[in-house]
Image 1 (cartoon, rainbow, N blue to C red):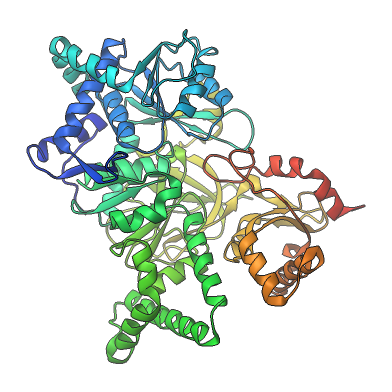
Image 2 (image 1 turned 90 degrees about the vertical axis):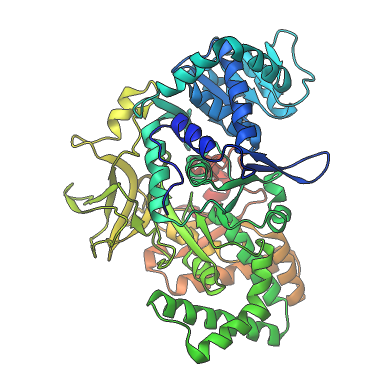
Length: 622
């Protein structure tokens, strides 16, 4: 839908949107006050005052156009204040994941040359204290938390003193700061987002104002975003997906951004905030689906029958709506009853007002998308990379095809290059109108457009590697067009080549098991081997329930349950894609144990190395 203001840079976006709502009580941000436990609004006027004050502080400390300011914080109003202040000076935001260890904080500070680091909690401040000793460029640390247990040598300012210093500085330098914001051009660097990677040190992705603004504006061309919408922000703002969709696009639409208290508080905050737009990753929807499935399977035969009938009814309604038809006089009342008996509880858990949800960051299992659609909630899957700001494609809200990532985003061009010949076998440029009915074979996905990054920070050779001679960005993903919809197969680098020479993509196999409530996590293995195996993290509670229902216990009974799961999968799998053996892993793959990236993707090599003994058990003399 149309933006409430026009903009080509982030300072222009903020100036224009605050001018539009000047003097009104329209909420820009919303947060839960820790003292009163009440949800509190920050108007655009109040936000503008705070941004100017913090910009004054940064300016007083010598931050100028092009300088880097690092931000190590959870989603909260101060994150937005810091970022907008940095942008208003023409400086560059370097946002870090709060889950990264102190050693990686130190690496990113040193690599980016950040002059200022803003941190949230005491935990993050202690990381900053350690990192400061290894960073030659860092001049000051700003702490939102009360400083404790840090070295006297740490150059430290509290959030409150920084704001006071900034306000005092505005009297002399306010106009100079305003002019710095006006001097920013679309080609200027806006942010460095460090991609976690599955090996080696992270790389800083250079995203310009044009990159971010074009992608946020394209979101308005593809999705319905209104100024009376509310978005509950809980995905890390250090991730390009939340930054563009849940932040920049929302600001441009005049949408209120409410910050969840924490990722663990989302289920509690959803009915409190009652968001109208939900942006998340597949893992959240998978957990909701698994919880529902467990509740149904534990219920009576009647409950299971009613649930199955409701889902079938919802799917029939969704199918008619996709073809532009109403439910009709027979199906309509049945669907209303299904909503009342079954689906209403799901909607209430999500706050009761969600119009649609957006899923990104990883593949969404088709079964889950179809279930939510049957329940009356369109789940829009998108696709992109940090290097593309990030969105390349997204399903249309009114006509999603689950298992695909939808249509190419407005203004973006996506091509498919045959992996054998190297020739482009089809390409589409996204528009706000009809999408051409293009179908191609599979190949590497390439991209061009105003959203494609400038390059990797201080890494010209690696930048050159990801662009071809014609300027196409090589995503490293494999996919194909199906009637104008883009389908992703997997990552090229994840492809398993078996000993027999078969090319196998593990992603779709792992995606199949993601919908099983007994499987918490799974990693498929088989590079250079005669057959596939898997490392499995069992879902503890559902497993305990299943064992109890069988009147069984112990390792042998547990093994029998998962043997059945893999046998059922293998019935419909190609010979080279069957899982021949598996082992249980007694620890979840997590960011903390360095088996997941901060964006929740498995570090395949690290997992195989950590559990090498189990892997060798499965292959023996293979």
